[in-house]
Image 1 (cartoon, rainbow, N blue to C red):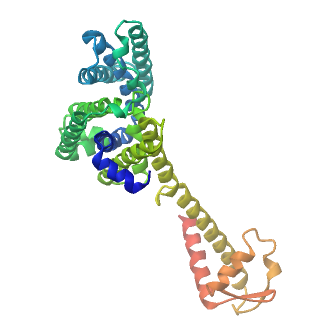
Image 2 (cartoon, one colour):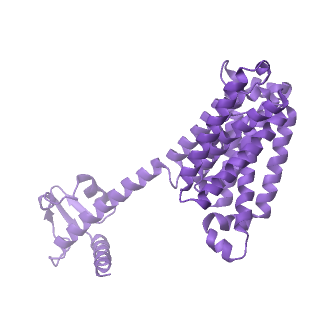
Length: 376
């Protein structure tokens, strides 16, 4: 299936169109809200909430005895919120740190959820539960009503972010200062955490309990590499999340026996890897380029300074000196010598070099700058 055939199929096939739109909207809301989780150093929060939602799904099935996605999501939401407030309570009322509380709730709730799933599998009506799809996700079960629900939640989240933008920005970077200004930090914290829980619950049907945290964090982590601005980061994270959903769905639809959820997460991981390597500010590639450039500049400056110390002992700076004088100098290389000649700082004739006036002046400025820094 080529690209044109796939695009035509998106507009004509109900199931593929629903899945594509659903994963795109889910990726956007997860990227948008995941930015706050990443910046608040609560990366494990998404993992803990998604796992904490599993018991709610199982209990919802035990109560109604039949498969109902809306009821399952409601149960997941309640269970996720309970897990979230337990985490807050543990952090506030004990000496345990946040990572310990997150790991504890994650393990307890997920273990309880798996216990309930094992019990449900032995029930007569277990075949209609379909709860295993919530572990790793099953995007094919998305309905148009599910997509509209995601759109509504995304719109509400966007409105809340815009309404409380300044307050949430202050809370992210200086919670104490936010409190001194008279803002209710507890309300703001509960507000953003509640929307993160809702976004995670919406994604359980598509990506699943196990992989949902990656969907929340990967777009935000990728966006963080490209900017220091919160607003740009939120926008980029939403774009990366939406693209992950669309591209992941396209790859899954183009090949047989590929689950949509894991493919979406892998595509999001590619965005993260690409950002870690190629982002101009923090990328490994540009960091290595800057490191090599700084090292070469330092080598050049050391060589020029050494030459300056030799040349300043002579009244005539154009006095030729043998290259062998540089042989015992650690910073000297033939490449640095060539660069100095290209800059018209020195002239090289055979095995002799001499310093030009511009080179002598540049070296004198560099020498004075180093001397002043040492004095300070």
